[in-house]
Image (cartoon, rainbow, N blue to C red; front, top):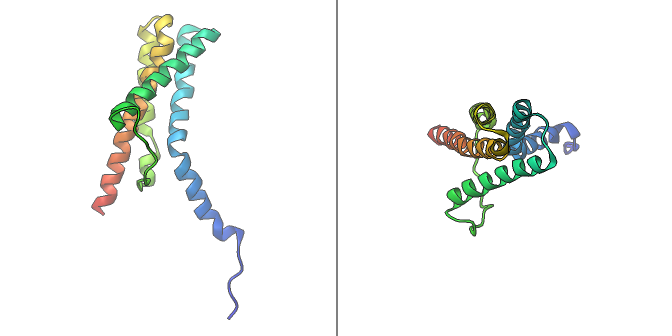
Length: 145
């Protein structure tokens, strides 16, 4: 009997799964930060270069604080074995919606000097914390089955 020939189509689905899995969190954060910047631009007008830096700074501070909370400090290492998350845990409906909602509230009620960094901070912190719950729920559902 002849061995099956390698096929591009046979390897496509595993490759696609790998790309989708590896992109899930970045995909969700992209869906958070794009609308956040649009909402804040709508509220405050186009940002000046310094306000763009403030926006980035707010996001960086939020990432650092949530990371320190998650790891118990800033000197911890990450990158241990990835958890298997069910695909629905990566749709990010709740995390993106709440993060963009937080940015909307900042744009609606906070003056622009504070709004650029605070809007990015609120969106980033909300996204990261809620996506953690989404992943935990997905993992809990997987372990029940």
